[in-house]
Image (cartoon, rainbow, N blue to C red; front, side, top):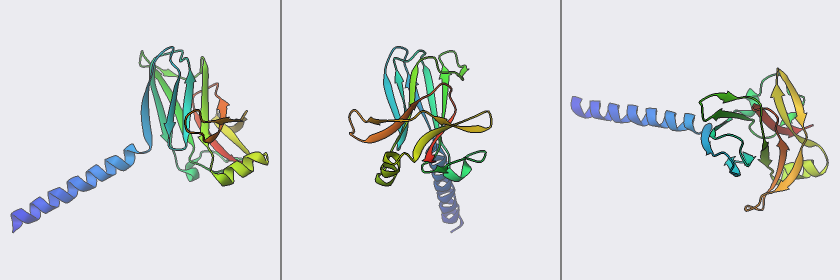
Length: 163
């Protein structure tokens, strides 16, 4: 009987550990970026598009809770903010963007209405301050979904929200 109890305990412990790891892994994803190639990497309803990438490396996208947005956002966050990081082929973190890189968020119907009314934008968090990122609409090439997008100048935290 003790042996069965031990086996059951081990099974439950392994199940708990694997569930925890899977849940933690769902918040960050990595994507391979190749110099000269155009790529569209999405993570749920958000993503990043590289137009002829300047460097080869890894793109790291991390979603955070809407309530965990740092500082005091001057807008109402409507989707999980996305932290965008890039590690070049030398293993160095890039901070400035050297080519055409865009962050986008796919909109739901209620957000689309707010966008049409001029009440929705993409924001970036840099040096302790939230700033508006010039935002425009783009239709997904293959998905046909409406997105709002902005060309980024620095890797960092981006969010979409109501003004």
